[in-house]
Image 1: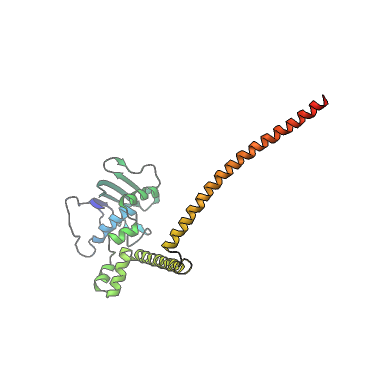
Image 2: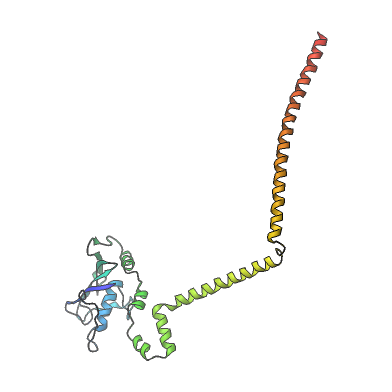
Length: 257
């Protein structure tokens, strides 16, 4: 995600409409005195994209509204995946003043006639990051940077692990180790079986068994031929037996006549 243009109105210290153009910048730094609104700019980007900020989360966001104002509006244009998008999010002191829109700058609305959660899902789909992932991958929350610089090696390692989601890699490592142990045990069991119950099964023995199998198959084919011959002879005998019965009956009838 690359921000292109940020417009603020009634957001913390940016009471009056303020516009920041990022399109022509490749590398830039936000600097200023304490309270000048440096963190507010990052909060505004997070608010526009996710409706929450790293410092406040999703609750108590009314404090972001400038003093004396009824509502705030954040308009962010950004690039993602080679396409340009615009998300506009407003928040008022009344629930009815809360609005959000998400558009593809070339092609119209990405989501229309959808619930707020559906529109948010579309934004996260375009970004490819959830709010927690965005914080970890894009933003280093205020206060944790000092701990990262001044902390001990263990503290920095833990902080870096939390930022990049190291627990996921730990879970993957544990799963892979468990899988490896299971396969190793299976391999040992198979090797033991081959060394004991199948120790006498050699290539020579296999060849002998194959020869016996071929001999049995040949005998089976010969037996099938004899069976077919005998079945034919049996059928002929049954016909002859029927004819003999009819002959005897005819002789008896002839004698009576």
